Each structure stands twice: as C-alpha cells, then as structure tokens.
Length: 89
Image: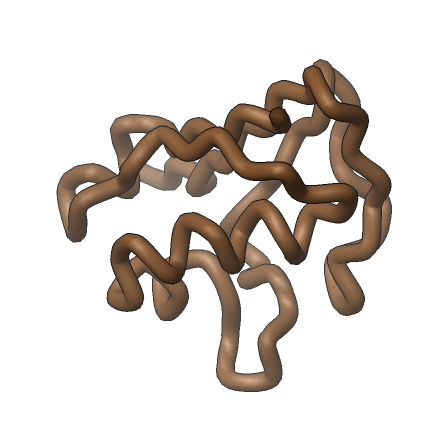
C-alpha cells in the first residue's frame, strides 16, 4: 500500500494522519487522508480541488507533476510526502 505522510508545518493547523492506502493515484491517496480528517482538505487543496500553490508533493522522492488532476501514478510501495512551503522574512 502507498504510504502518505504530511510534514510538521501542516500539523500546526490540524491533525495530519499517516495513511496507508491501496491508492493508484495521488488523488486517491489524498482522499484517503481526507476521509480520516476532512479539515485537512482545505489546507492541501484549493476550492477547485487543485493542489494549493503553497503545497508540494513528492512521490518516491520525485516532485509530483500534475497539480490539477492529481493523477500521478502510485506504486503499491510508494511513499508520498505532502509539504507546505515555508516563508519568512
């Protein structure tokens, strides 16, 4: 099963479960996490269901390509890391 992990930055705002999901796409894996914590959706996706500009996702160490459809393929043993960009001055 694909393993989905959220970084600490998101944990400041809401619970971020680590999820093992039988997902074949990034969207399916994210939906599994949103089923556990629906509030998480608003921190990761915008109103159109696209990846927010300040969020980046890595699948097996490679940055995801598709930010709108979120149909990047996952393998059964994929590791997915969801990160929120940091800013400061």
